[in-house]
Image (cartoon, rainbow, N blue to C red; front, side, top):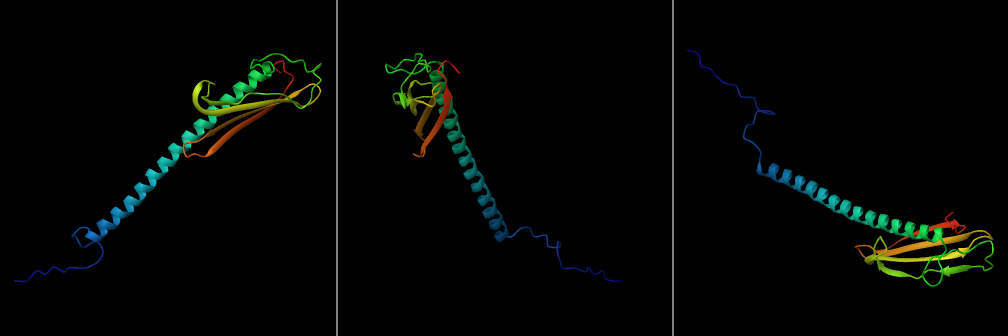
Length: 156
């Protein structure tokens, strides 16, 4: 009787013992590094969204104030009224607006924004309006939005 001999060829894919402990540890380290990177990226995205939201709110506040000033000139008692640029003989800053601190995006108390503006003569028929909104972001960094426009003072 002939003996049957199994010939065992050693090579790639013939070892069925599974993964070694070193291979498992290396895979875990690589996966951990990837997951930590994803978590940090998500944190930066959340922070960026918060900063973008603050810029949007500040821009809306500045735009609202700019439009109010364009509709009628700001006068010294804190109200808005019409100044006829055709007969106005002054030069330089017509009237600086008061600085409003601690307001929200709607101009109500209790927000992080500080709003200020100036109205100055640009030409014989127009005035320059500068509106500035400042705040500190969550990291304590000073941020600002500034808008400038020319206007005749009658909503144009």
